[in-house]
Amino acid sequence: METFELILFLLAAVIASSILEKFLPRVSLPLVQVALGVVIALAVATPLEFGIDAELLLILFIAPLHFNESRHVDSGALWKNRWGIASLSVGLVFAIAFGCGLALHGLVPAIPLAAAVALGAAMGSTDAVAVTTLTHDRRFGRRHEALLKGEALFNDVTGTVVFQCCMTMIAAGTFSIVHAGEEFALDLFGGLVGGFVMGVLAWGLLELIRRAGLDNPTLHVMLELLLPFVIYLAAKSLHIGAVIAVVASGLALSLLPQRHSAEAARTKLQAKSVWETIEFVLNGIIFVILGMQLPRLLRPAADGALSDPVGLLAIVIALTFVLEAVRFCWILAMDLHAARREGRPVSSCLDRAHLKGTLAMAFAGAKGGITLSLMLTMGAAVPDRAELISVASGMIVLTLLLANFAVPALVPSKHSARRTRERVDAEIDLVCQVIASIEADAHFTGAVRDSAVETVPGAEGERADVEAADAVGARQVIDEPATAIVMKRYADLLQDLAPAASAPAACRARAEAARVDALFDQLDQVARDAVLWDGEDDEDACGDASAAAGEGPRSISAHFRAMRATHDAIENVQEQALVRELQIIKALVADGTLTAAHAKELRNTVYIQQLVLD
Image (cartoon, rainbow, N blue to C red; front, side, top):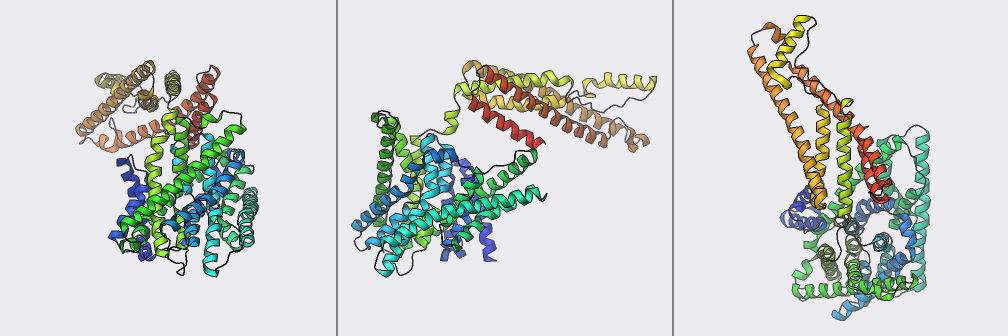
């Protein structure tokens, strides 16, 4: 029962964090989730207050998140920047491990150097979840973004091996560089090769199931969800790098050929929706758990184990400064080398804008789940274990704070960078043309008649129909409401685009939106009048046997038939509008109004809408 209550608390915290984030626009979602975790830990007794299994943290959260991220990463960009990623994943981790380790040993000589270097090695692993969130929202540049994602995927191995070597040295009192090299090679290259082979085998299994006719979206998604756990456990049993194996298998699946058919597209769309939901939940839970662990992990400082909490804070700030300084210098050196290799002047890397981007890269390497899981694997025999975990926890929180507040101040958001006036003006032109095409096609799409008055055969019936029409005017017949409804959807889009557009385009967008809104309001008024008129007639005819039998001017079933007909017509009009939109996009690319990249984004949006309609 306690486990069930814990799951409910975690899910409730994740949901609450997504709501609170809307009211805290300057605070990132991970920080909100960490804060909620702290509140839960202080207010409610849960099983996590006694600690969490680090291996369970890796397999339940890190493995599936790394797998999904590696399947969608730009493999071409990773290969193009492979040496830079290797530099960050190996060289930078060693530099951080020994830089932070020497600094901590110098500040607190009582902590053995091997234990201090172990903490530095754990801090060398960046949090892929936080990095993904930052690169999704911020414009670092293609090269820097590829470096950040590649570092987050591959630097876990180096940090883990250095950490384990330090633990071995503490336990045995000796250190073998040959053994450490063998372990590093087995973890890294064994994980890459083993993961790639398992990814190929998984792809073959999926293809075999498809050819056997057993494939369906639900089965396909369930197999995808199962793969990272199976691959992780298989890699652990083979004594190779488990996290790297999961990443390599995801990359293999992304590189192998995929089917391109309507059924495959539907399956991919469903899988994407499921993975987005699971990714949101797992991301949230891992940061909530981190917050729930903080009171327990920081308790040694409160008890005075590191002189006092102020002393702990000073140590955390000093080590975080060393960490960010090492990252900044390393990344700047890489940029200088890249500029020299490409024939660009070295001074281009030292201007204000470039230095701000480099500093943002340094702050973007936030720490999280991997660091926490490594520190929790420290044995009880490690000297000053509790104090080291307290320092690491404080550094995790501080790096998250820096990533949250410093990075947005240094680099613009992708949304604002993409929302240039030229792009917005082009989208307004596109939407206006789509609205015009919907209106032009109204004579053969979406025509729906409200059956408020049914014509009775014969002259008397026709005369009665005309008289009733004269009495209620347009309330009896609602022509093409689907057209106005779909036009209204595009008009709302114009309203959203107008604030970011140039003055002429914004004026055009608002005028067109106002015109469509007026048409929609007329339709809305006609529909309300028709319902009121029908209700009055039903009241007058309540004593009439024929009205009671459903033969009056309007019956409930007639209302439902009209609503269903309107719904079907809306889908027809929307489908035709999307076809027209694709044609207009092609024409705008031909005349230079839209760039190829912008047109691709717009087409992908149309394709998704078409799949939903199907």
